[in-house]
Image 1: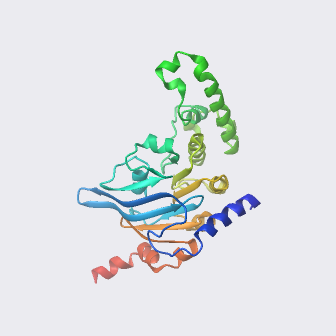
Image 2: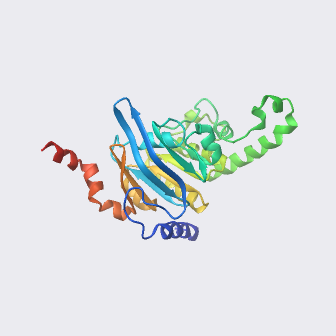
Image 3: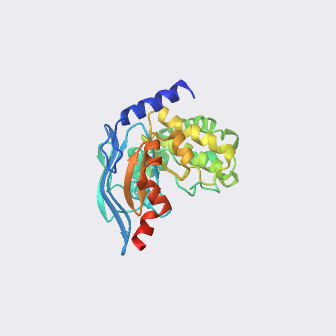
Length: 285
């Protein structure tokens, strides 16, 4: 582990030291604060989270059994779905009425459990469409190449740096559809960084990734924290959670049932209950 990585871990965990292991606990410097977020589909309540704060500069894991509402919660916070009620602030700005592209422009970007690479476009073109505020896309500016060519060159250079970092530089002219599942995950993460985000939200980043690429993805996620970014990720692999997470939030049946450090969560009977279903057994007796 590098000195920078150790410093990033120490700073994040020091900020969270002594926090109560309870749902909705206040953080010293939250970048994201969400209150009363609820999403119902007819009579089914998929998400009903009273309060959640995400500490700035930390890596926070969002875990829970299948059907807990984790991805739905992600979709709400990032503007890909609309809540039945609730509001949230990101980096000091009210974000619950923002559309998905506005959320990304504000600095909160996400990846998906099923990658969204444009398979019939090259890896480089996938990267370039991730850049923000491209003048060449505006009708009036498109008529004047000098206005957008310099920006396009800068975006291309930035994309090359990121592809080198994510070990995809040799694939830059390949169709994205030719990449393996793990390489598509890397591409999606690299493309997200084209926006210079303040917070990156990763939905099951290890799903479908072979062991050879898993460690590489882990190191890249740690690297985001080293650069001062905040990470919130959904994951089922508890070994991964223990390795990289500073803090863990646990959902079950659409609700946030507890929060804490990885060690606290592993020993929490509420978490064991949620995963093993003991509360359902008790209710049926």
